[in-house]
Image 1 (cartoon, rainbow, N blue to C red):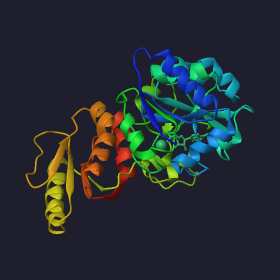
Image 2: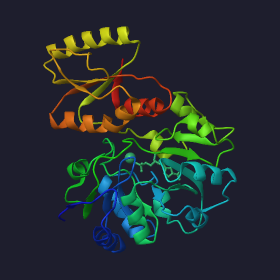
Image 3: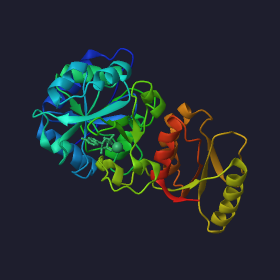
Image 4: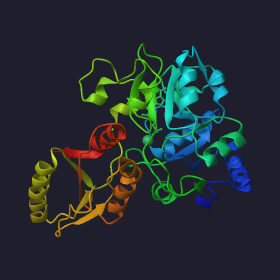
Length: 343
Ligand code: AMP
Ligand code: MG
């Protein structure tokens, strides 16, 4: 199969392009498209055969369910049941946007999309290309991140191409995604609404709407007797080919750790890369990339930099921990999962 990359205007998506992609989806094909979080690998959410292809193309374990992307808030009534009252308030405030809600699923949802769960993950993205594709198809689109299983999520069309060339029909190129890390997954089927995956919407933003909301204990590094409700929690994720080493501690302390780590790795002839939050953290012996100081920029560019370092055949990527508040919690979650070693 030849994979086509089609450029599109992200502010005003050309309807002729959307129509072409819709035809592919209607015929059970797969289309990668941008959302505001990361690129998604889309299939018709009501076509089990097409959904099956998604798992195959990505090498995704079949027990890791997919998010249903919708373009009309009212569609949750069709796709979910026993919807708690608070849902409306959350939707009003955060949709369209990077918040995925877990609800009890209705009969409409194909079994293959949700594994053994009796729940469904729903999100209304804000990206205009995504919305227009969903509207044009007239069905929800199931879309996991458009990377090979375990790799960093794609934030640019070329990242999707690098992972999936020859395996999918079309990649819609709408430029770099705005947020850069995945949506927040919030479980509304538990007694207390529980964050299963931190993401684009922070705990403190959710607290403005929800009296009670908490992180799943696994996200806090606690051993939990509660089984991971989100199957995605148990898998290794977001990892480049290079080995990621996450360095913890105060600025001074982590700086010392990094210096001695670099000395050791240079003796082993490793090709080392460092991610800098401040341009002044420079070491002349290794290649470093400045990612930015603000969390928005770190989130937007972290996967891109991982992939750039892989293209340069790096052996090791060194990255410092960042402050855990708000979006920082989601970024640290990704760094911890990507890391082979935390020092
Ligand atoms: P991705 O598609 O790569 O963005 O990952 C989607 C995430 O949502 C994974 O961590 C899934 O395990 C999680 N997810 C999807 N559906 C459900 C569900 N019904 N219950 C719990 N977690 C879900
Ligand atoms: Mg993913």
